Length: 352
Ligand code: NAD
Image (cartoon, rainbow, N blue to C red; front, side):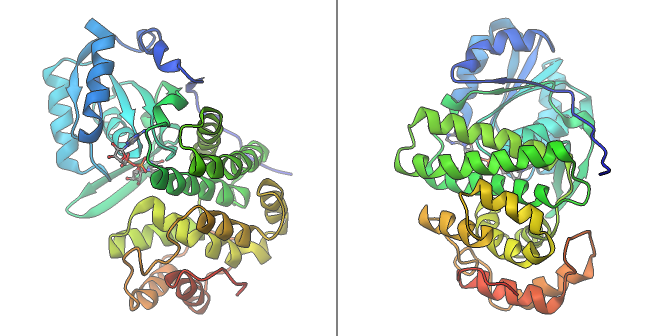
């Protein structure tokens, strides 16, 4: 056995009602916070800033998907104008992505308060979009100093988004199970996150206000984000990135539709990972179980219905082989074409 393990130094405060500890936590990292949110979560951000009193320097509530550079410029200007010395990010991957951009530009420490299951708050991965092109990279400086995971904040996350976001998190862990640079801690986190999410998402689907299931799902997402932050991704994430960029497809939903097929493709090369995944998913073939789980929770499984044109199959298959990266099974144009044709029509995964 050989591995490298490099833990990230952030503090996690987890549990229902932990938002009530935000002043105490902020006190550890700064004195004048710029509070970030999307326009949709502006009222929550304003209430949070009110509660922070003099520790809130002001608000910036224009965070949007994929961190456009003009949005970062405006947030930087606001932080400088308000003489902010730290950032509080309340929201999903879009808001936390903006906080990461501020950490890179101004070196401001961040307190992250995630309200979706994206997991970005515990990864050193940043993204920026300029003139329609998204660039990503890894830099430990973008990690928050602390993360408050309060499952009560996820009670309002719409069911469809909860399911897609939760399956997106499962995807991080599935690929963590066979990452070329994984380690025993990544494996443990990955397996338990798949178990927690596969158990809680069906309960949330029936009753989005179930507090125990919301807590279990958020716990699973913390682990899944930690896996994504610690190990490299492979075929599944690369394919989703290509589809998102080429056909402007929705992030979490695309992950949901592709995942069973990507796992069916890689499964023959990684029997031990599949044994763990099967255990976490309650038995059976992991690719089939993931398909049944997602489809059973009403997720859209057809890439065509998510906006992918039929001629996109050939384009995406060519792109997949043009830019090599580590994957447990060699990536062939023929294999990816077969995989995408099934995903395009929302069919169950088949071994190929
Ligand atoms: P999001 O942050 O874009 O949120 C989607 C919408 O849901 C927004 O309008 C938001 O205000 C709203 N919302 C969030 N939480 C809510 C809640 N509890 N109740 C009601 N509404 C709520 O969505 P996301 O899926 O969390 O993030 C997607 C972005 O994150 C993408 O740009 C993706 O690339 C990025 N991401 C980055 C990483 C990373 O490690 N860097 C990881 C995962 C995702």
